[in-house]
Each structure stands twice: as C-alpha cells, then as structure tokens.
Image (cartoon, rainbow, N blue to C red; front, side):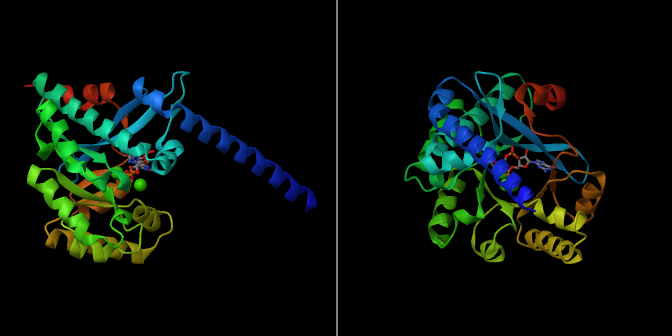
Length: 281
Ligand code: C2E
Ligand code: CA
Ligand code: CA
Ligand code: CA
C-alpha cells in the first residue's frame, strides 16, 4: 500500500510540473501569438433538428503554435481569463467571425450565422458594445448573423446591468445566447429575467440521460425545451454524439443540435469545403 501511495505522489508531481510548464508557456507566448496569427477560428455546425440541414455555426478558438503544436481552449482560456487577455482574444475571434462572413458574401455564398463566445471580463467593459459595432461596420456585415454566447455565471447578481447591455446589443441587431445552460445553479431564475434569444443546453444533460440513465434529467430537459419554446427562446442542445441523442432531441422539439455526431469543430477551409461551397449562387 505504501508503494502505491508513493507512486501516486510521484505521478501527481509530474502532472503538476507539466501543468506548470504549460501555464508558463501560455503566459509568456500569448501576446506574440496573437500578433503572429497563431490563433485560429474553427467552426462547428449547428444543425436544424427538423430536417438535418446546416443552420448556423459556433466559432471555437484553436492555438497553432509556431513549433507545430495544436493547443485547445481548456489549456489556455482559464489563464487568459485570469490575466485579462481573454478580452483581446474574444475581440480577435469576433473580428475573425466578421471577416469570415465578409468572405462568404464576397464569394457569392449565402452566409450562415456565427456564434462567438464572450468572456465575462469583455462583456463588462464600458465600451464593449461600441467595440463590436465598430467591427461589424468595418466589415459591413449584418449583426443579425452574429450571436454572442455568454455563460450564466456572468450574470451573478447583476441582472439589470446585464439586461441593459443586452438591450444595447439588440438595438444593433446582435442575438444573445445563454451558453452551458443547466450547468450552474441559478438557471430558471435567469430564464425568467434575462432577455436572451437562445438557450444552449449544457451537454451534461445528455451525459446524465445516456451515460447515467438518469430519467429525471430526461424529464427536466424536455420541460426546459418546452418552457423555452413557450417563452419564444430558441433552443440548442450541445454534445450530440450519436443518432440516439439526435433522435431524442428531435422528439423533444429542440430547434438546433451541435455535436460530434454531425461534425467536430473544423478549420475554416474544411468548413467551406464541406458545407459552404454548395451554397454558392
Ligand atoms: P463551449 O462554448 O461550451 O463550446 C463547446 C465545446 O464542446 C467545444 O470545446 C466543442 O469542441 C465541444 N464539443 C462539441 N460537440 C461535442 C460533442 O459532441 N461531445 C463533446 N464531448 N464535446 C463537444 P472546445 O472547442 O475545446 O472549447 C471549450 C470551451 O472553451 C468552450 O466551451 C468555451 O467555453 C471556451 N472557448 C472556446 N473558444 C473560445 C473563445 O474564442 N473565447 C472564449 N471566451 N472562450 C472560448
Ligand atoms: Ca459556447
Ligand atoms: Ca456550451
Ligand atoms: Ca462549456
């Protein structure tokens, strides 16, 4: 028994060391990486559950380092959030999304909407809405094609302040989505108070239903979708990994689905080849 404890401690040590090395890399390279264009916009399709067609997409960041590694958001986003760098990254990704819409239109391709993740720090910046407005004006793209995904912990006790900001965003024409819905604790409260356009149900629900066979989670999810519908809020379920998940969500009347069953997040080039070239007029 003693030996196994020591082995565990030893592995733990290595993991900590690796984690520390990664954190140091991220912190010391992020500024230069942004300048050098190492952050890339990947897109994942959002599918209409009624007919299986592509409806819109989500922008997800990937970091292609100069030495050829691909880093994923969970390796760097938490660090960006601590340092405030996520404000710069989110604006960069928002601009990349606008650029993508512009490219589609210039190529005569009917554009689809793009959702962009927005960190709490950026959302609370005084000139946040103006920044976004300037970027859509620069690329001459329709704000209706852009959805801002925010997390429920962003709201905390500031419902009025968040609603004021959502109102300003709506005046420009942006849509606002509540991401990872159901992963926190204040969900229903938020649904009643916030003026959101879309609800993205956390993939934890599908895991509960299919991995843990949790019948209550199934009932709650069905009711959430119904409730959102009654409130005229559109619904997306994320983490659709199999046909079984797809069929259940379709039977629940959910509007859109996102997940590996349809596609992983893929590069802009791959996304164009796979989904957009056929939309050329
Ligand atoms: P998210 O916004 O909830 O994005 C969905 C995540 O689920 C993505 O992970 C996506 O690749 C993954 N996913 C999609 N379908 C499936 C599926 O069927 N099964 C499973 N297991 N996973 C699926 P990713 O790309 O690693 O991003 C992780 C998180 O990092 C995102 O979660 C988001 O919170 C954050 N993030 C990504 N890009 C940005 C960004 O540009 N700005 C900010 N602030 N956060 C970002
Ligand atoms: Ca998201
Ligand atoms: Ca999510
Ligand atoms: Ca998430």
